[in-house]
Every structure is written in C-alpha cells, then in structure tokens.
Image (cartoon, rainbow, N blue to C red; front, side, top):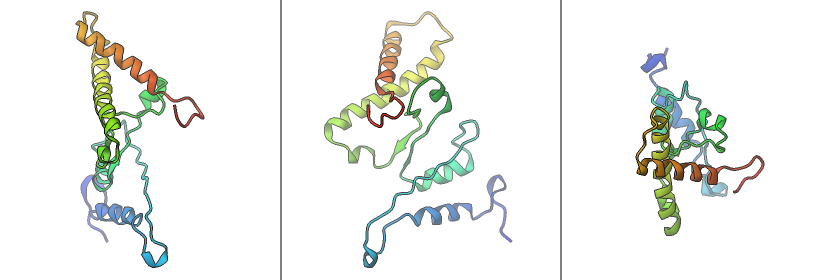
Length: 152
C-alpha cells in the first residue's frame, strides 16, 4: 500500500513521473545509440499550471509549451501563451539574430496580452499603451498560421 501524498495523489507520483520521462533518454551505444524526445501532454483544469501534476512534469522537463483555449477561440493558432511557455535550452540553441528578435518579441507579446486584458475596461489609454496594443495586434496576426500550413 502506497502512502498518500499531496492532493490525494500517491506519495511516489513524482518518482513515477521522472522514471517514466527518463525512459525517453540516451540509448545504449551497443544498440545504435541516439536519444528520444518525450512530449508529455498535460491537461490543466481551468488553465491552472500550479496544480500538482503540471508542476511535477514542468520540474522534470526542459520546458513547456502552454496552449490556451481562449487564444484558440480568438483565432490565434498555434494558441501558444508565450508568457507561460518556457524553454531551459531556449536561446542557447538559437542563432544570434534569432535570439535578438525572439527575446524582444516574446516580451512584447506577453506585455501585449497582459495590457489587452486590462485595456478592455478603460477607454482613456496613453499613447505608449495604444502603441503597445497596436503592435501586439500586428505581431499576433503576423504569427498566426493557417490550417495545414506548417510554416508561415
């Protein structure tokens, strides 16, 4: 019998997750070598990434892509929330030019989504906020991908 852990999950659930994900690892050189990549998919309840299972898997993996239903229904596809998506490898795997563009763009998109959520409640926005909102709309449109179009 296994002892209870947090949120009524078994106490060894973290160990079980890490053991499962470590199976997608470096292969024995005697059998051809190489490595495998695991893409665990975690469904959150109401987008709660701080729940036990999402935090377990996030702590084990090298990053996460957070897909958001609200963005999907707004026509943003892929519906990636750049504010919650993280990569531990990230910029180390990018060219210098890509690193410069991606870093500032990710920050701008995250700021845009944050400000856009509050801007709907007020009509008296300063020029800097209006510029941020306009640029965010353009960036979002630029990054949208059509159905069956793997690269835009």
